[in-house]
Length: 285
Image (tube, rainbow, N blue to C red; front, side, top):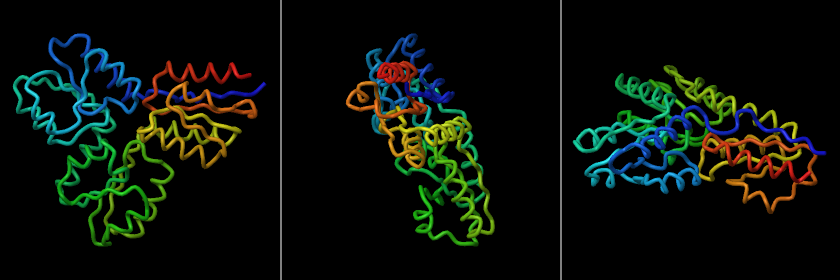
């Protein structure tokens, strides 16, 4: 019989759970229309369920500007200051802020450091909404890079006063490596390790499980940054890593040839999906 190990940290983190609960709460009590600015989390199953309850997704500033009334919920990824300003100018729009507290902390760091005239470097994915929101709290002198190669192309001078933050879901091992390199390039550097504790714990556990497994199943949305990082980490330790969104994706996979199977999931993966996948894997043996 195969050994199956489920990560204790799999599933919703604090920030995601808090945001999702706020949206469901507002959907149940709000008298008028309810919107989230962007999908509340990167999980299609949750977004579809909320749509059934009448929650609509606003995808752009233009849609927000055209809104005349209703409740707008800021999702866990957070947004830039401009979005708050737009909402503040609308008397019939009620704002509910579900920004993850860890992300909110980065906003304050960037706002403060930028106000001092320091150059800001955000280590993360430039296309991710969390990173875009972080950038929205700084002045113009702000750069984003996801790797050492991208940093080298920024032309950072040793004379720059540089303040560095990280996307909360960035690979913690890579962040330390990047900071070590930067400290050799810049004289005046302030480094803020803003990768959240839940992310670091999840990545460490995923690495440990993958290093001892013949196969690893990673559950999460394809657009979820933190889930993709888990896949990346697991593939460094294990040759057989399966990235799935739901239990349906598991059916074509053959698991009977593996003796030790690890299961983990991203921070935006609901518990019921994790349990369903686990039950299917256990039924294979």
